[in-house]
Length: 197
Image 1 (cartoon, rainbow, N blue to C red):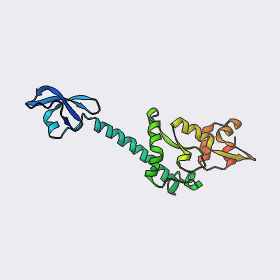
Image 2 (tube, rainbow, N blue to C red):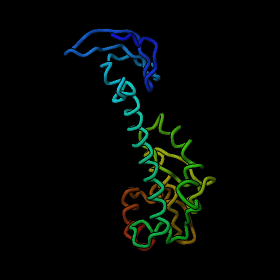
Image 3 (cartoon, rainbow, N blue to C red):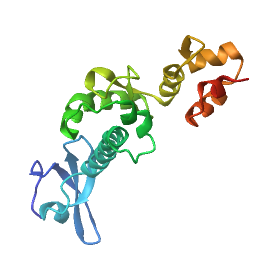
Image 4 (tube, one colour):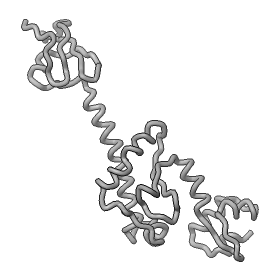
């Protein structure tokens, strides 16, 4: 049996012979990630096994994270550019634009902060700081579901009898549940019908 101790194969470094199982020589290998695993020597030598399995796991996580990030950009483009999108009236229909020229520009500006936000928050979505502003680095941040919900309550402003305030403040003043006003607003009712008791 040839001694391969200390030799490197892909991400694996041979540590020591461990056993013979089903007539196959099995060795203890240490992966670049720090994990140690007993693997068939033949599989390593012929290149079928190049790591402990961490690469596949990390690639999967990267793919899922990257896929979600891509989806955010797709939503922005749909909201701002596609008149057939259900949300277009609240974005592109109001003159809100996506100022990123393409996905690479978006990624360069927002991907690092996205990954940082994802470390401590399962739910991450993009939010415009100024609700009437465009989608751009200066006007966007990452937010949790609760932050999004709270901010939406203060971003819908209605003017009635010369007074302008957000939907939440109208709710408090009139004693009408916020959710009732919110549903009326998104059914495109008139200001009078939204605020009526």
